[in-house]
Length: 225
Image (tube, rainbow, N blue to C red; front, top):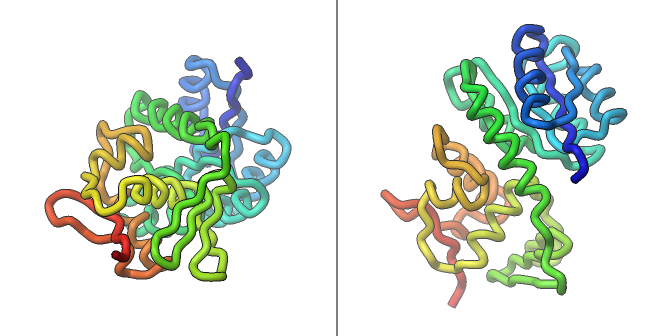
């Protein structure tokens, strides 16, 4: 099996080296970068399968790094932040990050999150073209493209996975914990705010009444009758 490549970006050398050492011990090939420009350059040359990316970086921050690398080639990104509030998470998810981890964190949890991101990225697409229609929204599961009427809507990798997961079970109320496990691939030490933020993004892009909040449970996709 081809060795998976992970780029670790953090300006704190101790943290960067600790993460890199743990990921190498888990069998990954790892490169590191310590600032924004270096991260973008390393991503282009190293061609990683996943990126562990700190928000606060010299040169330009992790949010700008995420914008630039996602524009060049979509890649799973786990963002790290020392902030206690959800501002970085909301912005990070909006520029294409797939997951979010607050410092300080457990190395065991970080490794599990990276593995989950890679498993999701490696999922096989359907052998035959498959399209779902939900009202004015069309979801092409094979091409991973979404249209609202005649207009194509750009979704991040995770936004698409969440929408497709809900669309495959229309009207069913799916718990946040179930979505974290089945879409993100993890549940332990996870925050349901991750799901909520992605749902907010989908509502903004596709319409506020498409995904219904099931209070005390999670979310359901509304299908016009």
